[in-house]
Length: 431
Image (cartoon, rainbow, N blue to C red; front, side):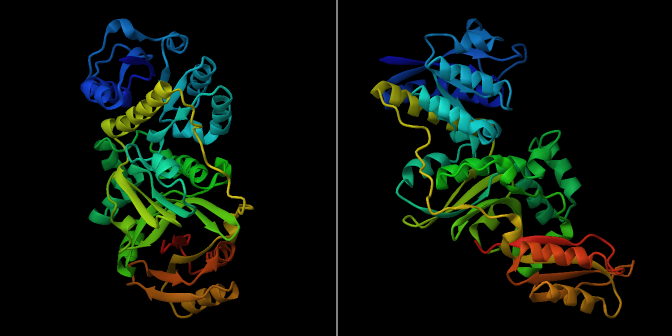
């Protein structure tokens, strides 16, 4: 039986999961694909910490070059994360004639164009299923299962930390800071969860989904990114009263001849499938012309979930090697009808607005007058109970409005003497 050798760079949580699967399912995989997959070298800076898998100490090294330059290794698996030195390791592996498997969404989002070009020039592949949704096979589904489809939109809950935080705020009525504290205590959030809470991790994944679905390489700086740090437990409670849940969504949507690419908190109708996605789970809702609307759902993180996707990529590559095939990593063709990206100021949406105003006659009329001046029509308005401070939340839902008009109106509203906090606006999507 032919043997394919794998070199692993990154012996952390997911790396241990990959080794465990390859050890425990060695016979099963060999029977299914007719190839023996063997881990030949493992590299990590820390070789002293205890792991939950046993490996031959002779295959361990702290020097990545010993893995990259080993002529017997066919596939390099990069699981260290971050930009550098991961980028140098992947480029080195490709130039040495090795295929690459990675879960590094940040690196691919920021430098994917360069890496994929080098891979193609060398007749090698970079597979990255674990970079979006861990074990959810969304990348393979878009590339292969839906290959004949054209897409109109993708809405994704692709960050488990932020979704867990919003879920706790919704279930328990707790504050954002308390929900983040609990997420850290349960191991669902990093010590510094900024990338998750502020939507940056979701944006990295959205770059990849946008390219796969629309063939358009989008720079991270061109994505509108707004996290959940300004969402309060009050906003979540008011959302429920109005029949919505708040979710942090990564959205790519084709509107006429432009793409909207954005990450932000979103009001979703309670009856929508994405509204029921709770905790650390991820879900990607794909709208296509042939297969219709599809939702891919599952754990968005976790050792074995992510490792399962990495092993799937390894298996795909071993089969290509066995058959002597080269299938380009990215088979997306840019949609020629897309002329560019829509600027945030041109986005149109319904909006939830919360304005903290002193409870006195005439204030609501001032607010309504400013909104009318900017061409913003009100669908509903509710003035909540008076607080001890005499300040009350005025909650509004608008009809469709342009982003620039809404922000122009809120900027003027916030200058009214009776407005005591910066007003909050959250976009509403029917999906």
